[in-house]
Structure formats: structure tokens, C-alpha cells
Length: 294
Image (cartoon, rainbow, N blue to C red; front, side, top):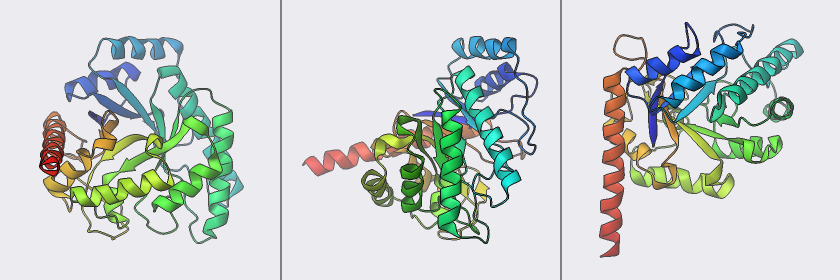
């Protein structure tokens, strides 16, 4: 598993690589523009080239892009949908240029409107964005389920993926905090097995392209998206290890989006702690497999 953190590209894309290396990352995630604004950041070719060169000389093996906060492909407001589409296309095109493993997208929100119609609007925008880009995959992130957010269940994610019909370019990003908050008890290996089995049946394991490791400040089924530092929330070390240790999720990029001790994001120490929990989770699975063979 390629474990790392969300880092800032402030000062140039290559600075994101530097920050990832400082934190001991094997994977990094960035915003390709200011996360609270619509206006795309123009990325000159020398900025992209510097990023690619820095990445090639680093131990980082995977890069993800996260879309901006205002984006809502499911909005009833045509202006918001148009801006969301433009922003999503830009993210995918930047992903093409920097060789990203995927663009992570919150599927959107119906707010107070009809969910089925919101799903259709979101899927239409995603299809259009994929058609306007070339290679970079789109990873739909499961949501905590607050309000009218889409993607709160495996069934809803499966419906979206079917409607997007993006082939190998449309997949999923699984967030551990959001899974717990939306009612999936992943705090034990058996709980993780149940979720992965449902994903395999309704979506296909091969569609899982990336992971977010975040502990949760709020309890199971709270439908509240409140990230906690790894091991310091409702998942705890045991729950994080159960999430990280599932055999079907190995070799994927896994990014921490935690607040950090000083509210500046995941530190080198927290990334190292996640790596240790991954090793703990994998070892527990191996012991269980050996016992089952006896």
C-alpha cells in the first residue's frame, strides 16, 4: 500500500513533492487550484516538467488530485453545474499532464431536491468531463451521508458508476471516516470483509482506485464528516488497522486528510503511524489465514 498525505502545491507543483518527501510519503494528494475558488490555476509547462522531474527522483509512487470544495455536479443551479463541469475538466486535464493516478471527486449533493434526478445530473456532468480529457481516471469518493449528499452507500455509488459508464477510467475512492459515519462498521476485519464483499458484488473490486485514511470524530452512523487524526477517533488504531489490512486493498494509494496535531495536516509521525498500522493489519490477516488452514 502506498501511504501518504494531502500536501500543498503552494510555490509550484514541485513543492508538493518536497512536502511529501518531508513527511515520508509514498503517495500524495493535492488541489490543482485554490480549493475554495472556481478560477483554475494556470499551470505552465515548466511547472509541470519540474513536478515530473521531482517526482521521478523521489520515493513517491502515486499522485492524486482532489477537486475543489464548491464543486457540485448534481446542483439544480445551471450556473453551478457549468462551473463544476469546467473545474472538473481542468482537474482531469491537469491529472493527464502530471500523470496522476486519479482525480478524487465528491459526487455532489441533491440538497433538498430529488435524489434520482440529482444522480442523473451528476452522472451527465461526469460523462462530459471524461469525454473532454484523455487518460486520468475519476475516483468517486463515498460520502458521510449528511443532507442530500450523493454516494453515501455502496448501492448509490454503484448506481452512479453505472450511469457514468466511464469504463476503466471511472472508479472509487474509499474514505474510512465516511464509511463509518454513513453506517458501515469497519472497525473489525469482519466488518471490513462485509463492506468489501458488497463492493465486489455491486461495483467490482477492480473499480477501487484509491483510499483516504481518516479517523472519525463522530460515531457510527452519525452522517457527519468530521475527520480525526489516525487512531484518535471512533475508529481507533484497531479500526484503522482493519481498514488498511484488507487483502483486496493492497498496492493502492492511501492518503491521510487528517487535521494534524497543529491543524496543518498530517505530519511525518502520523504517516509513520499509519504505515505501522498497515503492517499490523496485514500481519493480523496473515495470522488469521494461517489459523484457518489448520
